[in-house]
Length: 218
Image (cartoon, rainbow, N blue to C red; front, side, top):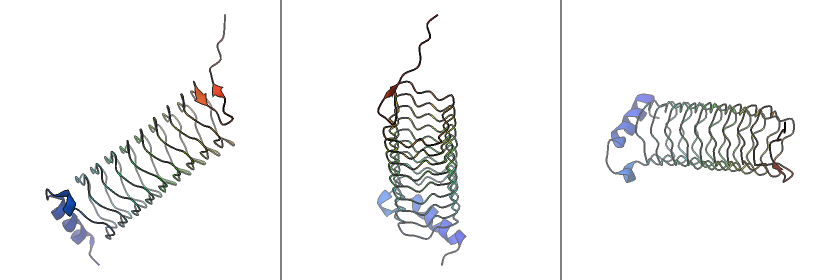
């Protein structure tokens, strides 16, 4: 088995090549590797073992990390625009201020992960497991969260404008100060969810009614 230094040398030697087709690390054991601020755009990491890897500040534009194991990985400030992480394991990972706009995160495992201030605009998080995740001040504008599990997650101050939360599990979720303007919560489970000071103008509620702010006449 390669040590961390050998793994890093292997990756860096290939990421300097011009041909993206040669950047294939699918199924590789890259656990614990340090690839801070490395440009990994378009790289194939399908099913790769990246447990505990340091990818903070790295560029993974359009990269394919489907089914990869990124448990406890450091992805702070990483750029993952339109990257594919379908069914990837990101349990307890750190994605603080990462950019995942337009990313494909179908059935991704993000339970207990830190997504504070993370950009997830237009991301596909359908059927994702975000239970107990920290999404404080995260941007989820127009995100697809159909059937997502957000139970006991913290979304304080999160931006969920036009987000689709149809049939999402929001049991015990903290949505304090969240912006749910024109979000779709059809058939969502809001049992014991905290919704103090949330913005819900035009929000479709679980029973199908559209929430409108009260107008007070003087």
